[in-house]
Image (cartoon, rainbow over all chains, first blue to last red; front, side, top):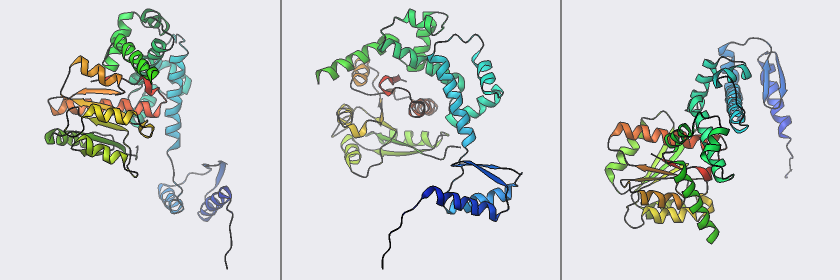
Length: 185
Length: 148
């Protein structure tokens, strides 16, 4: 005899999760799929035992909060750079206020997860944005420096060279040659 | 905290350079799996095999027997399967012509081989970090040009 089964994965996962949590007498609330809030404090041992059991079902605990916060930091920076808004306060103050954490905390967390510093990430984003403006909008460096709030063209060119190893004009030349080749094909 | 590995491949016919390179990666804090090949033909055989694990970054020496770096670059760039691989030229030459030619042909990174181990570690760490940003932060890879 052979039977055919249809699975509802959400229900299965939820049931497994509920069974394990009930079994441990943990008070909890399932917020949404993949997010559980503990209503009481649970000890490290209990956590470890629970996570171990869940692991057997292929359920892994992700350090979600950290990754989520890092993503927020990135989004805030990208938005800040690409909106070309002149943020009147320093980036560190802006991030701390917007995300409601001390800059020291944000900065350490960011480096731990991304292997780079917030400062470097901001510079990288600004240079990426200036590349787009060079390639797509055919803006001059003077215009770009103004739009991205650099104190001078020299400051932008130096930062471009330091970040990419090539000058803005070399960059432009290489990209336009690449396009010529692509157009010929 | 990142448990994942970044896959790195180097094709270089110089044994010392290969050793130097793998040692440098072992000392970096980023988790990497490094594979090396002795020439361009060996490299392309691996990449073209069906079950190959494609690297995030491929380091190519320019002067290699059987198939040189430029030939590999052309082959890789003409195959859409390899579209996500960042290509780093890893060469002793610092001729401006060479550098421009490789960039125009699709290389993302040009590294002049450093002479001492600490500089090499610093350079490789910078390359991997910046590449990581391109992978994880949605930057436009077409504009990824880096010279070290």
